[in-house]
Structure formats: structure tokens, C-alpha cells
Picture 1 (cartoon, helix red, strand yellow):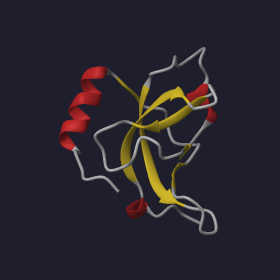
Picture 2: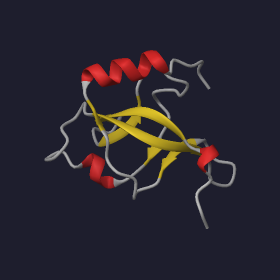
Picture 3: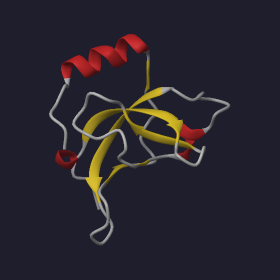
Picture 4: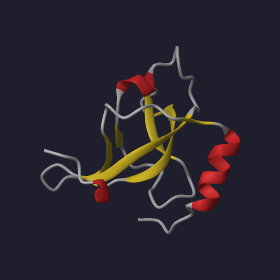
Amino acid sequence: MARDAWAYREVAVESRLDWRGRPCISPVSGQAFSTGMRVHCSRRLLDLAQYPLGTSFLLSVRISDRQGGAPFLYAWHGDPVVVLTKARRKRFLQMYRRLRL
């Protein structure tokens, strides 16, 4: 089954520590999604040897939920890894500033 291209949108995310002290990926502030929203993506992004905490990425995500659970962002694990520099991240956030969901 092919992916529905219309369901996916680009979102800037970053690696950080969750409330338990484990690395996780979350949306960057200033976008349509809450910074507390979970992001399901490739585990490659959590490799601290390759990408230190605070690294920003550009992901193609869709909103999903499991049987009525809390909504989360889903990024297909096979998509290429796009690392955002600080300048590119700032430019992306200025171009795609949206209201919160």
C-alpha cells in the first residue's frame, strides 16, 4: 500500500531528554504541534554518538493515534535523515509558522 502524500507534512523536530532522562524526539516550538507531542520515527535519530542532544531534523510526518489513544506524529523510518542547521531551522520556522493544534 502506498503512502498518502497529502496526509504528510514537513515538521522541524529536535532531540532532547524526556521526563525520565531518556533521549526522545519532539516538535520544535513555534509550529502547529505542541512540543510535548510524541514523535514516532527512526531510532537512528536517537543515536547520540552520531547526533548529539539538541540536533534538529526535518521530518515528513502525519498525525496518528492507536485505537483512540493520544495523537502522535508518525514519520516513516525509511525516509532520509535531514539535519537542520540553526540558520535553516530559523528559516523553516519563519516560512511555516502555524497556529497550534
